[in-house]
Length: 271
Image (tube, rainbow, N blue to C red; front, side, top):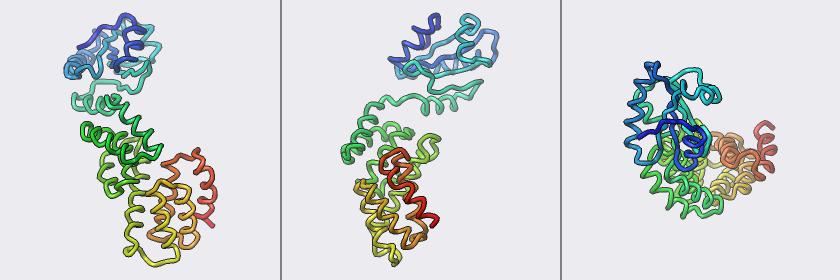
């Protein structure tokens, strides 16, 4: 269930390259530590090898405690590949610790998610969606898997994107990307129903932008969105403005397409 740390390099850093190691920095004199310990032991007993619990007595290894800035205990740090990926201080209820672990532990299906990311980058959206669906079914709280699946669905079945993202938008690291995908999926869905769109000189550009996004041609999409902004900046409730920003979020501002269009798009918003 747990092991006592005597050699931090071996017991934690090296071990964490094979399996995540949750380190409980504690001391015998610490009342909250004595309360937290059994909770961590109980959860670790159910982990089935997904992660391991290591108990580090700060009185026995004060140099290690000092090196990791331990000023208050209990202090719990999760190590993966020799690095701290998350931590908490103090006594938390068991239900909160379980939620924290679900969020912080790397997915046992991380390799599948990484493969899907490469497939998406290469335009193999159907294949990416097919390998991500089982991940989301097995780990419904896995925000990264949901966001990657939504990205694949944007180009295959955009009407599923909003449902797929129902828990990902609260993630502090992936929330912006999730919202961008929701925005773009809405535009693609609207563009596929031209009869429902308001008539305007901006309408043809809006439809072209939706089709280009659906086909992952973001350069063409931004060209069309620039036309929309030039013809009617507030068309469809200002959807062109929001969609352009969403593309930049999705690609990142250092992407070559973003670098090519960001200045022109920003200018079109205010000219």
